[in-house]
Each structure stands twice: as C-alpha cells, then as structure tokens.
Amino acid sequence: MSPVRLRRCLVHLLTGRGAVTRVLPQAAYVRVQSAIEGSEATHSGELRFAVEAALDLPELLRGLSARERALQVFSELRVWDTEENNGVLIYVLLADKDFEIIGDRGIHGHVGAAGWEAIAQRMEQDFRAGEFERAVLHGVEEIGAVLRRHYPRRGPDLNELPDAPVIL
Image (cartoon, rainbow, N blue to C red; front, side, top):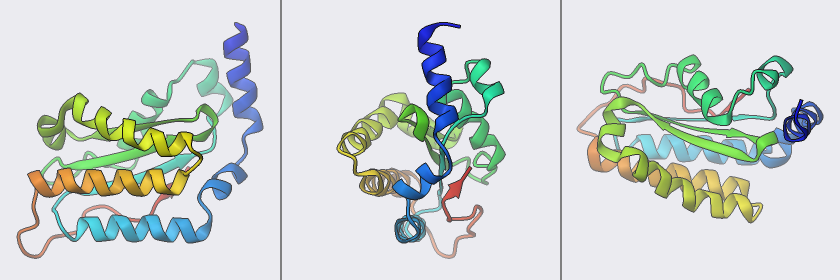
C-alpha cells in the first residue's frame, strides 16, 4: 500500500462520528434544515445535505473517492427521484476534507459542471477558513438561487424529499 493510501486509511479510521457533531452541532443542524426549508419555499427543486465523518475500510481499500461516494449517496437518498429531475445534493466527507455538489440531470442541464464548480469554489473558501456552517449555508443559498432561476415556484409545491440534513 502506498504511503498516501496508508495515510488516508489512518485518517479515516481515526475520524469518528464525533467529528460530525463538532462541525455540525445541533443548533447548526437546525439552521441548515431551516435554510433548506426556506430555500425550497421559493422554487420547485429539492435540496439535500449529507455529511459523513469517514468511509469504511472496504471502501477505502477500493480507493473510493469523495465524488464516487457522493454519487452513491445521491442514489441512496433518492435525490434523482424528483418529478422535474431538479434535485441537488451537497455531500461532505470530513476525513478527506472534501465535498461534492451533485445535480440531477434536469438542473445539471441548466447549470453544467462549471456552474457547480463556481459554487463549490466559493464554499471552499469558507471551509478552508474553518467556517463549516457558513460554507453549507452559502451553498444552500447559492444553489437555491440557481433553482429559483430555472424552477421557480408556481403555487403549491409537494416537498418530495426530506429537508433535514443527513448524517451518515
């Protein structure tokens, strides 16, 4: 096993679930959920936020990346299963200090990889400054603006996916 891979395995094995509560205490969890609810009141899109402390050893040995895990979580949380294909996932993998924004094909067709990357770069500034909650809230705000532009709310709207953050 290469030194880089060994280091990654050790970091993941030593990063427990307590890491999530340090960066997302209960009050922050509630504020993120409230931000998602507020955002979804203005558009017909669906936004999910998921955070995971670390990957399991078999996933690490397979070399699973944060992007690949985000795609798995996108599927597991059924973010793809919206009527207008306008679901978006913000996924954070704490042990790797990495995150991904995954948009379903409907919204991705409007935004494209460059649009998600621009939002991610702004979020990354907050993450690097140690402002975890602010990074997530900025991401929710910016993704909400994109969803409002392409999927404005037109009357009553069914909330197709839960708004609560997911701790994996």
